[in-house]
Length: 219
Image 1: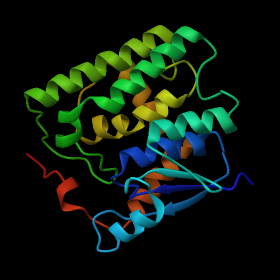
Image 2 (image 1 turned 90 degrees about the horizontal axis):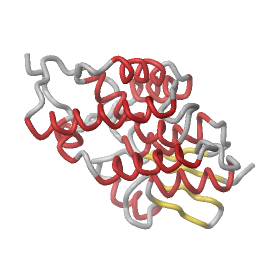
Image 3 (image 1 turned 180 degrees about the horizontal axis):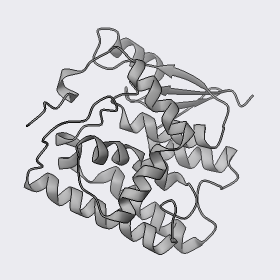
């Protein structure tokens, strides 16, 4: 036992929770899971109980709390994966870290207009100009990673980068976005992962609905 607890939010909606959960699940790190549903009367008190910044995910290692999905992924890689979360090639590691940092800080329009929703396919979605620009940059970023590594995952084998961009696979597919062939193949490969299928099954079983995250069909 690693005495690990990962605090997450709704699997249907919480893209940041997915990133940490997927890395740990894919590499079969043993952890307990605590789910804090978002947008309920109990949410603030539960966040106060579990999270230093009242956000999730949070990884608890004994008495230590690690918050923010990128910090969690790096900590898990360092302490429990013997570095296997990144490729051995230093150039690919640098590319992967750059891509994850960009994902962490950018793509605001995409996040706002295409929230992750694992249970739905939105019909007739038409991105506005800012979202279209984010989608185009996302396609370029993913294609460049796949070209530099020769795939099949973003940095060759499955890595922190794939965990970090997993919500993008749901978004591009769920909003009917046409992607270039290498990105489409990567999305298919990601959605076939047993760990990602387990997340999707659990998301479908959730009963909570957050209206602000439910983008209506547009055609």
